[in-house]
Image (cartoon, rainbow, N blue to C red; front, side, top):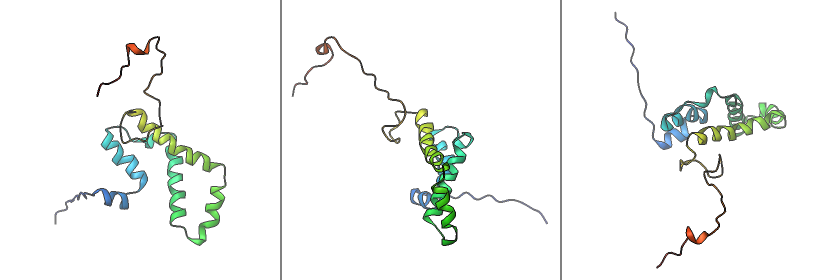
Length: 129
């Protein structure tokens, strides 16, 4: 009797990914593949982000037997680090390509430089209609 392995690949559409793939898996596998970059799982903030995801899931899918534990964690000093990890995660991806239109505006370093002009008319003019 011979032994062999069969591998199956599942292909998900956008709606299936949104519904069936965890947030951390989307962020650690799908986004890095799309952006052709390293996964953020080795970054210092990743553990806090995973805790944020866990707390979120416990709130959304809460069971009465663990509600006291969730409240204790929500009012602990750790929750600030969990929330901050989401901003650090956004900054991680935005730093890779600050001009990428899929990223929210207002994060990362501005690509606009402010400068004074002695004579603005040299640079600006009214467009004729």
